[in-house]
Length: 252
Image (cartoon, rainbow, N blue to C red; front, side, top):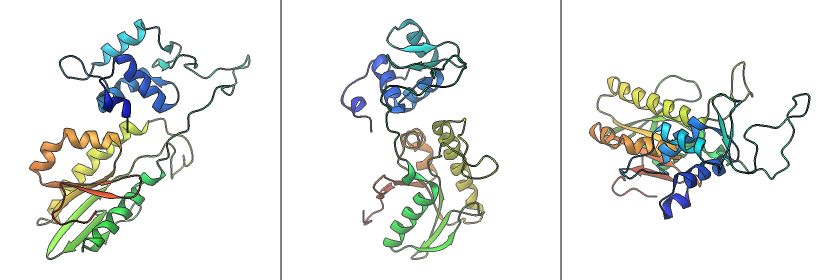
């Protein structure tokens, strides 16, 4: 997903540039730091990601980025782009004259689509759906049976940037998707463990789109997932499903 980060060790400047290019515009400094840490784009000599003050100090000392100190928190942008929207004498926002980076399409990663993909994949493996929650319905997202074994799955998708329902429907969210995904992961994990009370003999699993934040969280909590015998299902952009750990004899 980030080829520059995979092929060489990035400097702090390169890591910040990569994050800003991916976003396609300015970001609050705390969010820049958060993404560098989550994706491990830059590592110190001791092998650990940088602390927040390290990133703050680098940005304030570097002349390679534009920082808008009128905002709270400060916004940082790439050279040649305004760190905050420009306006005319009346304070109205003016359109940018430079080319805009196309936003990545995450329409494939909604909870409903992830759930549908995982269900279809498991049915192709011989599992039979005995219970399925749709929308805001209560209960496990998926309960399946095969050969006397029960599988309970909690599903989460990638949050959108706008509210999908309620009084604020259509309005842009103030919270970015990345911190929301951390909350989604924690909620799914805790909810899944509580399902054990009603399904004591069942195998437990979580299902997510293969987004970087979810994959990093799963990696960091691999010890807990293994100890609790919780499997993972990853849905990729092309609709393919991967099971972790891989079930013996499973078809891709």
